[in-house]
Amino acid sequence: MSSEQKIQVVIDNKLYDLTKFAKTHPGGRSILENFNNCNATDYFYSIHSVQSRKLLKNMPYTEVAKEEQVPESDYLKLLFKLEKTSLFKADYFFEFVQILHTFAFLFLATYYSTTYPLFAAVCLGFGTLIAGWVGHQSDHQRDNLMRAINDYYATLFAGLSPHWWSTKHNLHHLSTNEMDHDGDINLAPFIYLWVPKEKAQDSWNRCIQHVYFSALYSILQIKWQYDSLLWAYTHKNYKELALLIVHWTWYLCLPWKVWVVGTLITGTISAWVVTASHNAELKLEGKRDMTGEEETANSKYQIHDYFSHQVITTRNIDMHSWLLNYICGGMQYQIEHHIFPRIPLYKLSTVKPLVKELCAQRGIEYREEGLWDISKRNYRNIEELAKAKV
Image (cartoon, rainbow, N blue to C red; front, side):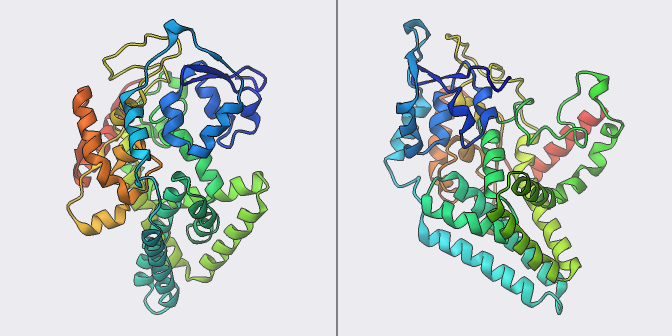
């Protein structure tokens, strides 16, 4: 879409002209373009804070024609009800404990880096992993204090740029498993998560992707750290760039085996938790792909329902071990996280019964499996795609 092309989005049955706002939209222009001429009501409220919603009042709009209007969804009713509780608010004591864990692991990694390098590498891996989970959570929950802390915390201790992550990850949440918009599943030519439509889009290595894909998973953290550095440099965010340089200066002062193994541990765990729960699930062509839903559009602005979209494109990890629950940091509740991304990860278990109830009312399957079963499903899916013909 041209940078001058008009962008119109429907929210609360009002057609907003966001063409000028797109230039300064914190999430970038591409997200708004993806919702052009679409009803984005549920998507908008799911991810934006109360303060952000006030900006809508200053945007130019026209009322949608009566025959094109849609009623408030049951999801939105539940969201507004839960927002009146404390579920969306950060528990500062719990947040402090998580950050303290990070400091403890990273201190042990540094202190024992020369005497017990393997132990140090494990500590570094867990410390960076938790820093990543907390940073991810702080970016979502729209708490001003936690986001201010995260500007330093995630950058220094996880080596990740919060601004790069916010742009990338918000797009993932708003376009989950959409083939043309969700960068988290568009991994070709390294890993193909759907069969290419043309031979020109194919690559020789697809036939063996099930052999090497787990090795690529292990370098996920390194890839994210590289992308963070690149983003900070190209966007001239000198504050983030300075903090990332401090992070890497500390890393490179450690024995190379410690930080390499520690980073591979972080990448491997992160990848199997966040990708295996998405990669083998339903893929969507775009915003108007109603695949997997019974209802049909009754408005030219209507797209696939937000609640259904999130449920059919992800899967929960059923954890029976306190250690695995601890390692996952709340990301085992992928369905709840995608439906209520602003709720802190450590509170998601509270809303699980409500989500399951709404799924039952809608006749949507609530999918949850153990980590081993999800991993096998993910492997089989990648293997099948490796053998599929174009």
